[in-house]
Length: 142
Image 1: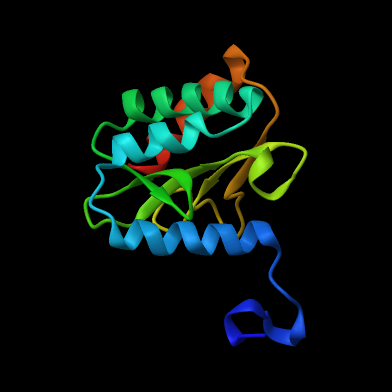
Image 2: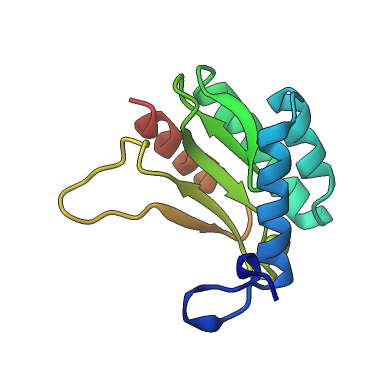
């Protein structure tokens, strides 16, 4: 077994983790524009994840038009002017989880005291959830 298939402590990467690593390697080699890459990634999701991802994509693009769409480990993501991912959407099916997730990297301006959330479970998108996502994205890029 090659060293790239083992985690520290001797555990193997799951097939989903290996697929994410392959997706990231492909992203680094491709010249495909980010919008097309995101649309492709969303189209490959299950219908329930796709519905949430399409809405999250629209919200992020409306709320933070300065962020550049791209994929990151095969997930829809949005980067700042330096190419650093600010936020991303992970479908429930990506790692066989029970809910989708909206995550924020350390480039997001969400700091609040000594501890704050950087990932949010998204089971469905109500009007209240959409409003909260807008506020989080706006705060992340402020």
